[in-house]
Length: 423
Length: 145
Ligand SMILES: [Fe+2]
Ligand SMILES: [Fe+2]
Image: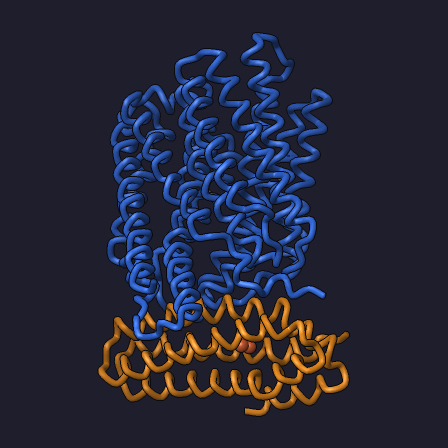
């Protein structure tokens, strides 16, 4: 019999996901720092060393870090299956992810085989630990079928992304050559952004979009087909790349991209038909992220600048969507752990603060505004290189990230203050 | 097993979701008599739902399936938390504090969602398995409003 999903004790200690969530914004700030420092050089070409460094600071340091923390937190809740030894797994994964990302990015920026290989090694190890632990939990997972399937596919996509990344580093570090190198890089990108991030966003979205704002659920055909088809597109692209048909491989990824556009459109439509009237920051972030995803696909499919697609996906979706989710998830987790403790201690005399008081809405909106400025400036800088908007964009990204960091720390300290009152 | 209990109780969850969203919508018009009525409707609906679970479904389930007792305890604890939020909502409506109402409703909404998620994912399916013969009876009772 399966009563597993019911025990509250299966949720990991709050410190595990929070550690991921609190460190992540610092990586976005670091990426902003590189943009500010290197200026126009970053967005001239996606192949510049510093562009690669910025990309990995955002994709691994920010996006993947938050996704890992969220997975460890959500698996018991959404899929009814806890991650074994979650504290040790969480700490080890995060340490290796942080070290690996910093080392890899340094290796890209300044060269140096030692930095690249150390980074790749640490990332390979950290992600292996995560993939095995989360994979074990997902193996047993029940929960909503489409979400569990999407999570499994996303994890598989992370595995492929990591393997391709290791392969590329081996080629770079070994000084050897790989025919169709650019095609393999595109494949690595596709599996990372469309697979790992995109498919996970879909799987989580199926549940949280209707739940957060009381919207109609996604069409069942979409939930059944979107994630598997996106994975099939990526798989086709992989086979084609491996057999030297790089020109056709793009079409496989095009399929995945179009599916994500359909998902984005469906999401905007659901949210438009929501019953809860408030336009909170989480919703604003969802909207900007879905629009950025659609715009990115448009730019890419019409042969626009790859750097613009990159900014829209990495900053527009990769930074935006997790940011919006954190502003909801962290206050709720804080409140929920406190109320759980209150019940356990029978200390009903202490009145708990409500969710919003952990992160005030007005301040979150200001943060969103600064973020939008950063996104706008960086997108313009990528679209029209040389007009001098990269530095202001980097500066705005630093400000947005530090403001976010400060708000999330406020939430954390508010939680600790009230927990002391309960003890 | 056909998910008779799960479907009926899930539908009632959705009914309560709509009622909570309705209070939030009314909050925008600042007509406090309308807000107060909407809040009362929500609280009545949820109390009806809790009563069906705590007085009828849960005891029946615990009797045939003792291992369900621990999760049921957790559910009761969360019901108590929600009742406390009802009380706070009542107070906030009485003193016409819009910001407090919004905060309480937001908190209530998320507490309800994660609570319902657990019931719909695990407890109701258990009940449908364990209480096959009586499923229709519980389904009728919850739908009777
Ligand atoms: Fe309940
Ligand atoms: Fe219920």
